[in-house]
Image 1: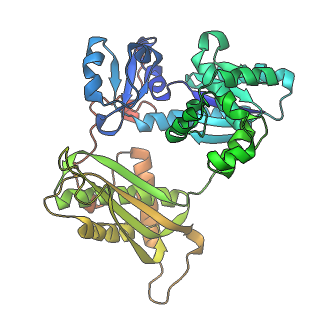
Image 2 (image 1 turned 135 degrees about the horizontal axis):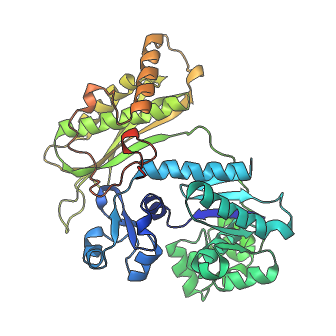
Image 3 (image 1 turned 120 degrees about the vertical axis):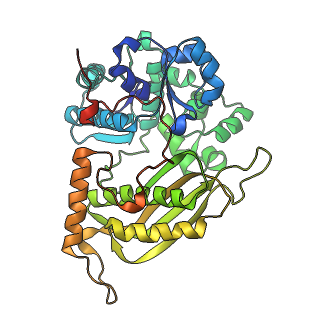
Length: 425
Protein backbone atom coordinates (compact mmCIF):
# COMPACT_ATOMS: atom_id res chain seq x y z
CA UNK A 1 0.00 0.00 0.00
CA UNK A 2 1.07 3.55 -0.75
CA UNK A 3 0.10 6.83 0.88
CA UNK A 4 0.46 10.26 -0.57
CA UNK A 5 0.63 13.07 1.95
CA UNK A 6 -0.40 16.38 0.40
CA UNK A 7 -0.34 19.75 2.16
CA UNK A 8 -3.68 21.57 1.95
CA UNK A 9 -3.36 24.85 -0.01
CA UNK A 10 0.29 24.75 1.05
CA UNK A 11 1.40 28.33 0.36
CA UNK A 12 -1.75 29.70 2.00
CA UNK A 13 -1.25 27.37 4.97
CA UNK A 14 2.30 28.69 5.43
CA UNK A 15 1.04 32.26 5.55
CA UNK A 16 -1.84 31.40 7.86
CA UNK A 17 0.49 29.57 10.27
CA UNK A 18 2.09 32.85 11.35
CA UNK A 19 -1.06 34.94 11.07
CA UNK A 20 -3.69 32.91 12.92
CA UNK A 21 -6.24 35.75 12.66
CA UNK A 22 -6.59 34.65 9.01
CA UNK A 23 -7.98 31.26 10.02
CA UNK A 24 -11.11 30.54 7.97
CA UNK A 25 -10.52 33.80 6.04
CA UNK A 26 -9.95 33.92 2.26
CA UNK A 27 -6.27 34.00 1.26
CA UNK A 28 -4.44 34.03 -2.10
CA UNK A 29 -0.74 33.79 -2.91
CA UNK A 30 0.68 35.34 -6.07
CA UNK A 31 3.31 34.09 -8.50
CA UNK A 32 6.64 35.73 -9.33
CA UNK A 33 6.29 39.47 -9.89
CA UNK A 34 2.79 39.30 -8.36
CA UNK A 35 1.46 38.19 -11.74
CA UNK A 36 -1.01 35.30 -11.23
CA UNK A 37 -2.77 33.52 -8.39
CA UNK A 38 -0.96 30.25 -7.62
CA UNK A 39 -2.56 29.23 -4.32
CA UNK A 40 -6.03 29.78 -2.82
CA UNK A 41 -7.58 28.87 0.49
CA UNK A 42 -10.92 27.05 0.46
CA UNK A 43 -12.65 30.31 1.40
CA UNK A 44 -11.13 32.08 -1.64
CA UNK A 45 -12.22 29.20 -3.88
CA UNK A 46 -15.77 29.55 -2.55
CA UNK A 47 -15.76 33.22 -3.58
CA UNK A 48 -14.94 32.21 -7.16
CA UNK A 49 -11.29 33.31 -7.26
CA UNK A 50 -9.76 31.43 -10.19
CA UNK A 51 -6.55 29.44 -9.98
CA UNK A 52 -3.74 30.75 -12.26
CA UNK A 53 -5.86 33.77 -13.13
CA UNK A 54 -4.15 37.16 -13.54
CA UNK A 55 -4.02 39.13 -10.32
CA UNK A 56 -5.19 42.38 -11.91
CA UNK A 57 -8.37 40.70 -13.16
CA UNK A 58 -9.17 39.24 -9.74
CA UNK A 59 -8.31 42.45 -7.88
CA UNK A 60 -11.89 43.90 -7.82
CA UNK A 61 -13.20 40.68 -6.23
CA UNK A 62 -10.23 40.50 -3.85
CA UNK A 63 -10.80 44.08 -2.68
CA UNK A 64 -14.56 43.62 -2.40
CA UNK A 65 -14.30 40.52 -0.19
CA UNK A 66 -11.16 41.65 1.67
CA UNK A 67 -9.13 38.65 0.54
CA UNK A 68 -5.68 38.59 2.20
CA UNK A 69 -3.04 38.75 -0.55
CA UNK A 70 0.59 37.63 -0.32
CA UNK A 71 3.55 37.61 -2.69
CA UNK A 72 5.41 34.31 -3.00
CA UNK A 73 7.72 33.82 -0.01
CA UNK A 74 9.80 30.86 -1.19
CA UNK A 75 12.26 31.07 1.70
CA UNK A 76 9.40 30.45 4.13
CA UNK A 77 7.68 27.81 1.98
CA UNK A 78 10.91 25.90 1.36
CA UNK A 79 11.77 25.76 5.06
CA UNK A 80 8.29 24.62 6.10
CA UNK A 81 8.29 22.03 3.30
CA UNK A 82 11.57 20.65 4.65
CA UNK A 83 10.02 20.41 8.13
CA UNK A 84 7.00 18.49 6.79
CA UNK A 85 9.20 16.05 4.84
CA UNK A 86 11.55 15.52 7.78
CA UNK A 87 8.54 14.71 9.98
CA UNK A 88 7.44 12.07 7.47
CA UNK A 89 10.97 10.62 7.35
CA UNK A 90 10.93 10.29 11.15
CA UNK A 91 7.52 8.58 11.13
CA UNK A 92 8.37 6.28 8.19
CA UNK A 93 12.19 6.07 7.95
CA UNK A 94 13.51 4.98 4.56
CA UNK A 95 10.05 4.90 3.01
CA UNK A 96 9.46 8.49 1.83
CA UNK A 97 9.69 9.81 -1.74
CA UNK A 98 9.42 13.59 -1.93
CA UNK A 99 7.35 14.26 -5.05
CA UNK A 100 7.04 18.05 -4.90
CA UNK A 101 7.33 20.94 -2.47
CA UNK A 102 4.01 19.95 -0.85
CA UNK A 103 3.61 16.24 -1.66
CA UNK A 104 5.35 13.01 -0.69
CA UNK A 105 4.67 9.33 -1.27
CA UNK A 106 5.06 7.00 1.72
CA UNK A 107 5.52 3.24 1.39
CA UNK A 108 3.15 1.57 3.86
CA UNK A 109 3.99 -2.05 3.05
CA UNK A 110 5.19 -2.49 6.66
CA UNK A 111 1.76 -1.57 8.07
CA UNK A 112 -0.91 -4.28 8.45
CA UNK A 113 -4.20 -3.79 6.62
CA UNK A 114 -6.06 -3.43 9.92
CA UNK A 115 -3.77 -0.58 11.02
CA UNK A 116 -3.70 1.43 7.78
CA UNK A 117 -6.43 3.88 8.74
CA UNK A 118 -5.01 4.48 12.23
CA UNK A 119 -1.45 4.95 10.96
CA UNK A 120 -2.63 7.33 8.22
CA UNK A 121 -4.50 9.41 10.78
CA UNK A 122 -1.36 9.36 12.95
CA UNK A 123 0.63 10.75 10.00
CA UNK A 124 -1.88 13.55 9.46
CA UNK A 125 -2.15 14.53 13.12
CA UNK A 126 1.59 14.39 13.81
CA UNK A 127 2.53 16.52 10.79
CA UNK A 128 -0.02 19.14 11.85
CA UNK A 129 1.09 19.04 15.49
CA UNK A 130 4.83 19.27 14.74
CA UNK A 131 4.76 21.74 11.84
CA UNK A 132 1.37 23.51 12.00
CA UNK A 133 0.65 22.53 8.36
CA UNK A 134 -2.57 20.65 7.66
CA UNK A 135 -2.30 17.72 5.24
CA UNK A 136 -4.54 15.20 3.50
CA UNK A 137 -3.64 11.51 3.21
CA UNK A 138 -4.77 9.12 0.49
CA UNK A 139 -3.92 5.42 0.75
CA UNK A 140 -4.28 2.74 -1.93
CA UNK A 141 -2.47 -0.24 -3.53
CA UNK A 142 -0.81 1.91 -6.22
CA UNK A 143 0.52 5.44 -6.58
CA UNK A 144 -2.16 6.49 -9.09
CA UNK A 145 -4.94 5.16 -6.87
CA UNK A 146 -3.44 6.90 -3.84
CA UNK A 147 -3.65 10.19 -5.77
CA UNK A 148 -7.32 9.43 -6.44
CA UNK A 149 -7.87 8.75 -2.73
CA UNK A 150 -6.06 11.93 -1.76
CA UNK A 151 -8.14 14.07 -4.08
CA UNK A 152 -11.38 12.68 -2.64
CA UNK A 153 -10.13 13.07 0.95
CA UNK A 154 -9.55 16.80 0.30
CA UNK A 155 -12.78 17.30 -1.62
CA UNK A 156 -14.91 15.74 1.14
CA UNK A 157 -13.04 16.86 4.25
CA UNK A 158 -16.14 16.87 6.45
CA UNK A 159 -16.70 13.13 5.79
CA UNK A 160 -13.14 11.84 5.51
CA UNK A 161 -11.35 14.06 8.05
CA UNK A 162 -8.72 14.42 5.32
CA UNK A 163 -7.83 10.70 5.36
CA UNK A 164 -9.15 8.12 2.88
CA UNK A 165 -8.00 4.50 2.61
CA UNK A 166 -8.94 2.46 -0.47
CA UNK A 167 -8.26 -1.07 0.76
CA UNK A 168 -11.01 -3.09 -0.93
CA UNK A 169 -12.03 -3.57 -4.58
CA UNK A 170 -15.45 -2.05 -3.82
CA UNK A 171 -13.95 1.13 -2.31
CA UNK A 172 -11.59 1.49 -5.27
CA UNK A 173 -14.42 1.09 -7.78
CA UNK A 174 -16.58 3.70 -6.02
CA UNK A 175 -13.66 6.14 -5.85
CA UNK A 176 -12.91 5.74 -9.56
CA UNK A 177 -16.56 6.30 -10.45
CA UNK A 178 -16.51 9.61 -8.52
CA UNK A 179 -13.31 10.85 -10.21
CA UNK A 180 -13.50 12.72 -13.54
CA UNK A 181 -10.98 11.37 -16.03
CA UNK A 182 -9.21 14.75 -16.26
CA UNK A 183 -8.38 14.49 -12.53
CA UNK A 184 -6.43 11.24 -12.94
CA UNK A 185 -2.71 11.64 -12.27
CA UNK A 186 -0.99 11.42 -15.66
CA UNK A 187 -3.95 12.44 -17.83
CA UNK A 188 -3.24 15.83 -19.35
CA UNK A 189 -5.63 18.35 -20.86
CA UNK A 190 -5.31 17.09 -24.43
CA UNK A 191 -5.72 13.43 -23.46
CA UNK A 192 -8.74 14.33 -21.34
CA UNK A 193 -10.43 15.95 -24.36
CA UNK A 194 -9.62 12.92 -26.49
CA UNK A 195 -11.02 10.55 -23.86
CA UNK A 196 -14.23 12.57 -23.55
CA UNK A 197 -14.74 12.27 -27.30
CA UNK A 198 -14.42 8.50 -26.83
CA UNK A 199 -17.13 8.65 -24.10
CA UNK A 200 -14.59 7.94 -21.33
CA UNK A 201 -15.61 10.41 -18.65
CA UNK A 202 -14.51 8.90 -15.35
CA UNK A 203 -11.45 7.15 -13.98
CA UNK A 204 -13.54 3.98 -13.80
CA UNK A 205 -14.33 4.17 -17.52
CA UNK A 206 -10.59 4.33 -18.17
CA UNK A 207 -9.72 1.55 -15.72
CA UNK A 208 -11.79 -1.07 -17.58
CA UNK A 209 -9.76 -0.63 -20.78
CA UNK A 210 -6.96 -3.10 -21.55
CA UNK A 211 -3.26 -2.71 -22.32
CA UNK A 212 -3.72 -3.11 -26.07
CA UNK A 213 -6.20 -0.22 -26.11
CA UNK A 214 -3.80 1.90 -24.05
CA UNK A 215 -0.91 1.25 -26.44
CA UNK A 216 -3.08 2.44 -29.31
CA UNK A 217 -4.87 5.40 -27.70
CA UNK A 218 -3.00 6.51 -24.59
CA UNK A 219 0.67 6.96 -25.40
CA UNK A 220 1.90 3.37 -25.51
CA UNK A 221 3.81 2.00 -22.52
CA UNK A 222 3.03 5.02 -20.32
CA UNK A 223 -0.71 4.66 -20.93
CA UNK A 224 -0.62 0.91 -20.29
CA UNK A 225 1.20 1.53 -17.01
CA UNK A 226 -1.44 4.07 -16.00
CA UNK A 227 -4.31 1.64 -16.65
CA UNK A 228 -2.57 -1.15 -14.72
CA UNK A 229 -2.20 1.23 -11.78
CA UNK A 230 -5.93 2.07 -11.97
CA UNK A 231 -6.66 -1.67 -11.89
CA UNK A 232 -4.63 -1.93 -8.66
CA UNK A 233 -1.50 -3.48 -10.17
CA UNK A 234 1.64 -1.72 -8.96
CA UNK A 235 3.54 -0.39 -11.99
CA UNK A 236 5.14 2.84 -10.72
CA UNK A 237 7.67 2.05 -8.02
CA UNK A 238 8.98 4.28 -5.25
CA UNK A 239 11.93 6.35 -6.43
CA UNK A 240 15.18 6.77 -4.52
CA UNK A 241 15.84 10.32 -3.42
CA UNK A 242 18.03 12.22 -5.86
CA UNK A 243 20.96 13.37 -3.73
CA UNK A 244 22.95 15.17 -6.42
CA UNK A 245 21.29 17.08 -9.26
CA UNK A 246 22.43 16.53 -12.83
CA UNK A 247 21.54 20.08 -13.80
CA UNK A 248 21.31 23.23 -11.69
CA UNK A 249 19.34 26.27 -12.82
CA UNK A 250 18.59 29.69 -11.38
CA UNK A 251 16.07 31.88 -13.16
CA UNK A 252 13.91 34.85 -12.19
CA UNK A 253 11.51 37.35 -13.68
CA UNK A 254 12.62 40.98 -13.67
CA UNK A 255 10.62 43.39 -11.55
CA UNK A 256 9.87 45.34 -14.73
CA UNK A 257 11.06 44.87 -18.33
CA UNK A 258 14.78 45.60 -18.71
CA UNK A 259 16.57 46.91 -21.79
CA UNK A 260 19.96 47.94 -20.39
CA UNK A 261 22.86 45.56 -21.05
CA UNK A 262 24.37 46.43 -17.66
CA UNK A 263 21.23 45.33 -15.78
CA UNK A 264 20.99 42.02 -17.63
CA UNK A 265 24.66 41.29 -16.94
CA UNK A 266 24.15 42.04 -13.24
CA UNK A 267 21.18 39.68 -13.11
CA UNK A 268 23.05 36.88 -14.91
CA UNK A 269 26.07 37.33 -12.62
CA UNK A 270 23.78 37.11 -9.58
CA UNK A 271 22.04 33.98 -10.87
CA UNK A 272 25.41 32.39 -11.68
CA UNK A 273 26.59 33.04 -8.12
CA UNK A 274 23.53 31.30 -6.70
CA UNK A 275 23.85 28.34 -9.07
CA UNK A 276 27.54 27.99 -8.17
CA UNK A 277 26.66 27.96 -4.47
CA UNK A 278 24.18 25.11 -5.06
CA UNK A 279 26.87 23.31 -7.04
CA UNK A 280 29.37 23.51 -4.19
CA UNK A 281 26.72 22.44 -1.70
CA UNK A 282 26.58 19.03 -3.38
CA UNK A 283 30.39 18.93 -3.80
CA UNK A 284 30.24 19.05 -7.59
CA UNK A 285 31.68 21.00 -10.51
CA UNK A 286 30.21 21.87 -13.93
CA UNK A 287 31.81 22.11 -17.37
CA UNK A 288 28.90 23.64 -19.30
CA UNK A 289 27.12 26.91 -18.63
CA UNK A 290 24.01 28.09 -20.47
CA UNK A 291 22.39 31.52 -20.33
CA UNK A 292 18.96 32.46 -21.64
CA UNK A 293 16.89 35.64 -21.84
CA UNK A 294 13.20 36.04 -22.61
CA UNK A 295 12.21 39.16 -24.59
CA UNK A 296 9.07 41.02 -23.63
CA UNK A 297 6.25 40.69 -26.13
CA UNK A 298 6.38 43.73 -28.38
CA UNK A 299 2.61 44.11 -28.69
CA UNK A 300 -0.56 42.07 -28.34
CA UNK A 301 -0.65 41.46 -32.10
CA UNK A 302 2.94 40.31 -32.71
CA UNK A 303 5.14 37.48 -31.57
CA UNK A 304 8.45 37.83 -29.77
CA UNK A 305 11.14 39.31 -31.96
CA UNK A 306 13.46 36.42 -31.10
CA UNK A 307 10.87 33.76 -30.30
CA UNK A 308 9.92 32.81 -26.73
CA UNK A 309 13.50 32.29 -25.50
CA UNK A 310 16.98 33.23 -26.67
CA UNK A 311 19.81 31.08 -25.31
CA UNK A 312 23.46 30.22 -25.75
CA UNK A 313 25.97 28.02 -23.97
CA UNK A 314 29.69 27.45 -23.63
CA UNK A 315 31.73 24.37 -22.69
CA UNK A 316 34.51 25.18 -20.26
CA UNK A 317 37.99 23.73 -20.71
CA UNK A 318 37.84 22.40 -17.16
CA UNK A 319 34.93 21.67 -14.83
CA UNK A 320 34.77 24.12 -11.95
CA UNK A 321 32.65 25.26 -9.03
CA UNK A 322 34.41 28.59 -8.48
CA UNK A 323 31.99 31.49 -8.85
CA UNK A 324 34.49 33.81 -10.50
CA UNK A 325 35.35 31.20 -13.13
CA UNK A 326 31.65 30.74 -13.96
CA UNK A 327 30.61 34.41 -13.94
CA UNK A 328 33.13 35.43 -16.61
CA UNK A 329 31.81 33.14 -19.42
CA UNK A 330 28.19 33.71 -18.31
CA UNK A 331 28.48 37.47 -18.67
CA UNK A 332 30.24 37.00 -22.02
CA UNK A 333 27.26 34.98 -23.26
CA UNK A 334 24.97 37.93 -22.50
CA UNK A 335 26.84 39.97 -25.12
CA UNK A 336 25.90 37.32 -27.70
CA UNK A 337 22.22 37.36 -26.74
CA UNK A 338 21.55 41.04 -26.10
CA UNK A 339 19.92 43.13 -28.81
CA UNK A 340 19.83 46.87 -28.30
CA UNK A 341 16.34 48.34 -28.04
CA UNK A 342 14.73 45.03 -26.97
CA UNK A 343 13.06 44.80 -23.57
CA UNK A 344 13.58 41.59 -21.61
CA UNK A 345 11.33 40.19 -18.91
CA UNK A 346 13.33 37.20 -17.65
CA UNK A 347 16.83 35.70 -17.58
CA UNK A 348 18.37 32.52 -16.28
CA UNK A 349 21.51 30.44 -15.90
CA UNK A 350 21.88 26.65 -16.12
CA UNK A 351 24.91 24.58 -15.14
CA UNK A 352 25.32 21.11 -16.64
CA UNK A 353 28.00 18.56 -17.33
CA UNK A 354 28.13 18.10 -13.57
CA UNK A 355 30.83 15.85 -12.10
CA UNK A 356 32.05 15.19 -8.53
CA UNK A 357 34.35 17.95 -7.36
CA UNK A 358 36.91 15.35 -6.22
CA UNK A 359 37.30 13.75 -9.66
CA UNK A 360 37.72 16.67 -12.06
CA UNK A 361 39.59 15.62 -15.19
CA UNK A 362 42.87 17.53 -15.39
CA UNK A 363 44.13 19.48 -18.39
CA UNK A 364 47.62 20.05 -19.78
CA UNK A 365 46.63 23.59 -20.76
CA UNK A 366 44.95 24.82 -17.56
CA UNK A 367 46.34 25.52 -14.11
CA UNK A 368 44.82 23.41 -11.32
CA UNK A 369 42.38 25.24 -9.05
CA UNK A 370 44.19 26.90 -6.23
CA UNK A 371 43.37 25.94 -2.67
CA UNK A 372 43.11 29.63 -1.81
CA UNK A 373 40.23 30.04 -4.30
CA UNK A 374 38.37 27.10 -2.80
CA UNK A 375 38.88 28.49 0.69
CA UNK A 376 37.55 31.86 -0.48
CA UNK A 377 34.41 30.23 -1.93
CA UNK A 378 33.88 28.29 1.30
CA UNK A 379 34.20 31.48 3.35
CA UNK A 380 31.74 33.38 1.12
CA UNK A 381 29.23 30.52 1.33
CA UNK A 382 29.50 30.32 5.12
CA UNK A 383 29.08 34.07 5.63
CA UNK A 384 26.14 34.30 3.22
CA UNK A 385 24.47 31.27 4.80
CA UNK A 386 24.78 32.79 8.27
CA UNK A 387 23.96 36.40 7.40
CA UNK A 388 21.75 35.86 4.29
CA UNK A 389 20.85 38.32 1.54
CA UNK A 390 24.21 38.01 -0.26
CA UNK A 391 26.22 39.96 2.30
CA UNK A 392 29.33 39.00 0.31
CA UNK A 393 29.01 39.17 -3.47
CA UNK A 394 31.03 39.80 -6.60
CA UNK A 395 31.00 43.36 -7.94
CA UNK A 396 29.62 42.18 -11.28
CA UNK A 397 26.36 41.31 -9.46
CA UNK A 398 25.69 45.02 -8.86
CA UNK A 399 24.66 46.85 -5.72
CA UNK A 400 21.29 48.51 -6.37
CA UNK A 401 19.70 45.66 -8.37
CA UNK A 402 16.76 47.70 -9.64
CA UNK A 403 15.83 44.75 -11.86
CA UNK A 404 14.86 42.52 -8.92
CA UNK A 405 11.54 40.72 -8.92
CA UNK A 406 8.53 42.56 -7.47
CA UNK A 407 7.22 41.21 -4.16
CA UNK A 408 4.99 44.00 -2.90
CA UNK A 409 2.94 41.76 -0.61
CA UNK A 410 5.65 39.44 0.75
CA UNK A 411 5.34 38.42 4.38
CA UNK A 412 8.42 38.20 6.64
CA UNK A 413 10.72 35.17 6.29
CA UNK A 414 9.84 34.10 9.81
CA UNK A 415 12.00 30.97 10.05
CA UNK A 416 15.13 31.82 8.06
CA UNK A 417 16.05 35.42 8.95
CA UNK A 418 17.09 36.57 12.42
CA UNK A 419 15.73 40.08 11.87
CA UNK A 420 12.36 38.70 10.70
CA UNK A 421 11.76 36.10 13.41
CA UNK A 422 8.16 35.77 14.48
CA UNK A 423 7.46 37.78 17.63
CA UNK A 424 5.01 36.68 20.30
CA UNK A 425 3.71 39.53 22.45
